[in-house]
Length: 69
Image (cartoon, rainbow, N blue to C red; front, side, top):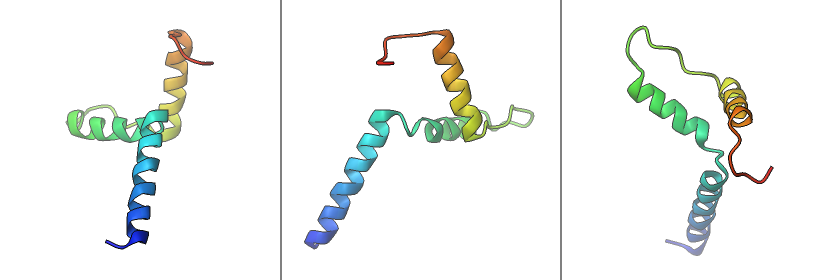
């Protein structure tokens, strides 16, 4: 492994960690869960990313928990 490959690997790992820490990967997790669990015929369709984040925001507004804002 060259130094440049090592740097790239480190940057990718840091980006993955920050994305997970900030919750930015929540839609990806939701879509993967929905595809694996709710893939039965007649199941509700997967929300779009925009619908998912709107739903997430609405749920947080209805049930406020400890958070910074």
